Length: 549
Image (cartoon, rainbow, N blue to C red):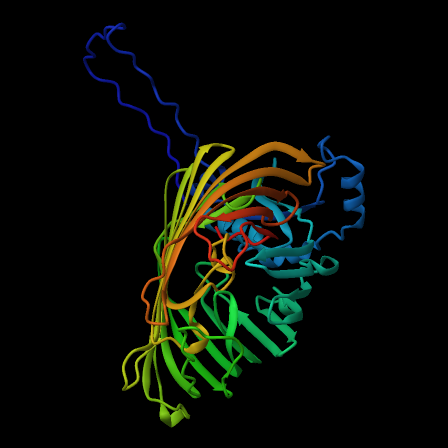
């Protein structure tokens, strides 16, 4: 949160004459304080709350008052006002707190069925302070489509995702996908306000040609900075074939079964200005079993991995800290949409132990550490840092140690020209078989096959130049272009050390959906490998709406 204050220079007692030719005095204009801050300083209270829900297309704008806009508004079911009132972090009679106002705005914008959200004060003639909550619905019926042809392998997906079913805020999704090894269809259901409460529910089921994946999560999160407590339960079940790839081809496969149960509870321990500290407990159970491994293609120098069944069960203590230091940006990942990023240090940590007394096959401490930080010297420049480290340490030594670092940089050359860069490093020590690292198309090396090589370490660098045109069609789509380069390498499992540095360049279209909640971008790109493998195509094509950075 940034507090703006007016400043006035003191007049000198005996001012010296100033030569107008030698110097020119420029007085800075005072910055007016924000209206909510003024009301907070006056110790005002909120006397009334009004909620205004705008339709998807604003028909007062000529470029949106078209037959497409009018038809879409007619077909769209307007979000119910009660949904937004449940999100508010303030009520009638509460004293005005600027931080809660802006925190509520971010919560509203984070909802997948909200395009924009602003909360403005209005003081009526009788002195009543009215909080006017203005939200605009997003177009929530999304068709997700993707296609890529990399290394002669085709991957396709098609799905329909409704983020605001009948205006209730609930989401329903159906998807189909096909890749070189399996076909999948799945259903997802989400409820951000279970029975009108702060509890959330997320359920997913996927049926694969070689098995199924199911998960369900019930959670009451820390929905605000000073939320006093949170709790949750998550269950997942996976039954399918585990594939091990090299050169984009499945070399080995084995039946894979994994069941996970996680229970969490935490509470607010300390609050100081805009930072909080939280502590809690975690109970974790994970059972993993592998079947007999079989070879499906010539392995070359790649050896079959060792598969060992395991049961991991035990408790942990958790600690987290978070600060409210959000800043608002635009046109970084999406288009024409506000994007909120936290610029403070934030961290989560869990430390526990798997115990044989609880039924675990090993006695082992385990840990998880995550941290994020952002920097922004101006509204045209943003840097985001993320790191995590997890693992366990039985008597045989550290294993499944997974460490990752990523640095994302955005710099606006002009309002419509953005340089975006990503640098990511992943390091593993004795990883579980399902956690091997791969390098390839799905992992950000857009000119190469998926799962190019397996390894226990990798690095990747991507640089994008993005140009956003002023071409907008029907207030629905904005046209943009991009040119990119990717570089990466993986430390291979076959004992040959680090692979060569793979590189590709490419270009494409960026089509921004101006009526989606997150400024969703559809990418149509062509990539050319600069040092391709003999078995892959010269040109790699992809279509999709997954934006990595």
